[in-house]
Length: 469
Image (cartoon, rainbow, N blue to C red):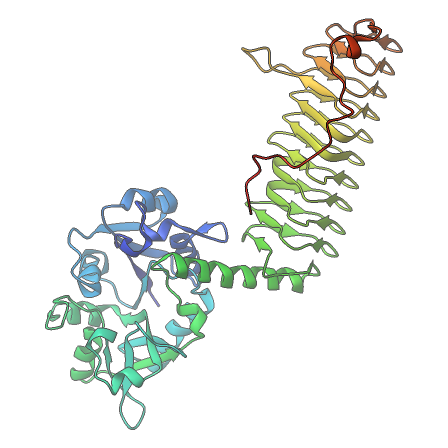
């Protein structure tokens, strides 16, 4: 059985109030149009043509050359859009499924069921419908007393009685390909909008004596995205689907309403995701981890038994049995090995940190190579920018760095060396050596009294310039 697909994606996204096509907006980390394409491929529909308009380059960039395209110069309705696919459809037998490009929730299961229903019932066409509690804006499925489809009426063209119908048209159809081509050639534009409605092909086929079926699916599968509110609703629904799958696999979520997980994320069993966390891109989290609260991970690999607390990490690797946060920032191209602690207000960028190293608070490590069992005292900074280039330093195994130290690149701190607190290190420190880079302290007797800098009478008070809440 030959199966192909026509996807309508030529709209101008007027209600999105955007310069971009609505079908390129992302839902759970994937463009809407890619959700549609992937569902079709998963359903076994490899031959796909996309009806595109002025914003076609955005769509082509996402879908590439594995699908075909047809340009719709004028927007004269859904029927007119499918007419542009006629050269793609001519000479084909079997069935064609027609979908809107803005329905990210459609599943491959719904598509397969509709195709099988059409073939088994030998229908000329099948309308995919759903029952909507609030059918406002949707076309209605009108049936006769025996339940047969009589016609589909767009919302704006409904009578008062037809507006009461809750069975809606999803704008998804399966047609016998030759019969669809025949019906398209007889479409007219006798309606309020003066447009060619694809729904009118159903009436044409019925008048020709053909059977038309209706395959009912879950209403959520039919949800389209026409504005920002619908984009939010679709994203929320997809997010719940994704989280539910992770829960089936042994992941615990404390609050799925405040947690967002992209579709490609992988999470190991017995991991706990705390509220307010966002896992993006191709993030991988190992087993028995704790993520959150209010943590964002973007394309991060995390090993087993690691805790990431109220922190941000992107495009980096974090090993097993690590403690990250709170309020840490792990930036791109960083590799953190196992058993490492990166604590409060620590930032790491483009660096390699080996096992058992600890930077517990207020530290910046940039463009550097750090060995095993290194201790960064509070306030340590690797000074990695000389005004022209980013150059890191090398800190070998077992180095102890005292608090408030500046390590000026590109020095090497030798194995088992110590850095005295408050030092600015500008030269290499040999293994087993002590590096001291600070001026001798000078005390000036009675300086405060002589300069009249006494503070005893200055009581702490609220800043007068503080904004009122």
